[in-house]
Length: 158
Image (cartoon, rainbow, N blue to C red; front, side):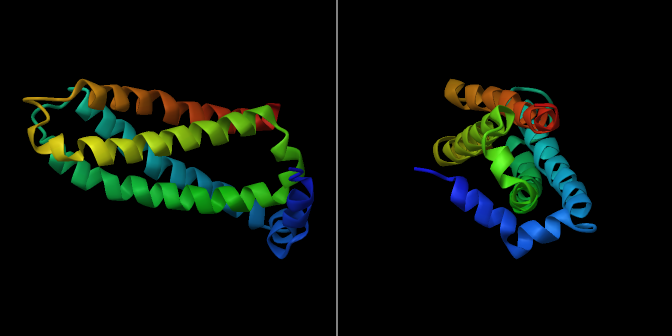
């Protein structure tokens, strides 16, 4: 399936044109970074807690505190990511770093959803009986989200 006509249509859309003119791109870029901070900061803190750091803090309470921030960051990042992509969709579609970033985001989000589905009910008793697969999921998250950040930054250089 040839996606290039869709990418060209996105670039030619009002959104694509607005992103290339004036303050659209810089504003979206700043908001994208804010979203990344809101997403990756809380996720990494929660992952570290699930891996055993800060045992004096209840895992369920930490999750309840940090997860809404991470979800807000994810939504902001996805929205601004689409905006940034619209500015140069044709070139970005073929960029290997962009492809890797999208794969890493997909894997990281799937990992988080699977964790919630399979291990959220363990959070009240996490320190007594942490499921090994749950801890593996937290460790994988600690690898995937920084990979997303690095890949995103490298897009400009590839």
